Image (spheres, rainbow over the protein chains, first blue to last red):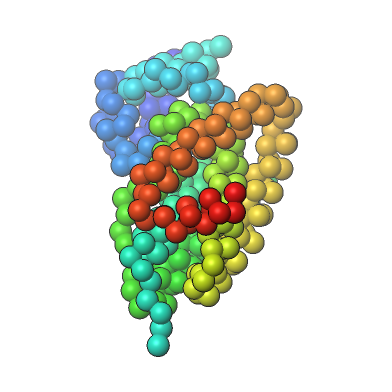
Length: 79
Length: 191
């Protein structure tokens, strides 16, 4: 994934979570940005719809931060 | 004179209401991000039903001259902890199917409890009709996903969530034993 598309995923993430994109730095903990973990489920489904990829539970088992989630998308989109 | 709800009845109906609201919020957000298609359409109806059910419970409680309790947790909050975060739409639908079957079983059990207040029974009957359709549309959507995900993967996912649901249900009953003791007694008698 190019820098532009990584930024694009981050921007979509911010849009879905309704937070300013600049707050979603790579080391930001995803659960710190939601009041309900189902919002994260919504966001992940939302991103897959937008970028046309499919994740499985295994892909997310170690994901805690924004950067780790972007890396998962990076792998899937380049694979 | 209008009957009063017992403290436990008020808690249970408020718990049902909270779970319906959580479902509505979840499906509402999801429906907003779905691409045009059957899932988008059915999920929108599902979201609309869940919010209607939350209103039915609110209105039912109000008929007894009181208002629902503010509860912070819903039944489905426990799914992520027990079964992990669903990572794709198929997994979301599988968890939904599991949850809807649990809801209908719970409502059916509760609706058969002797001496149930007619206002509560009437609410169950209204909601259960919609719940049947929820199971139906989700089942059909999962069937249509078989070519993409594979039938056995979908079946395995459903089994995984069933296992998690049994654990959650047991934990919830244990956690709120005092609140649901009448239901538990009825369940044991009819098992």
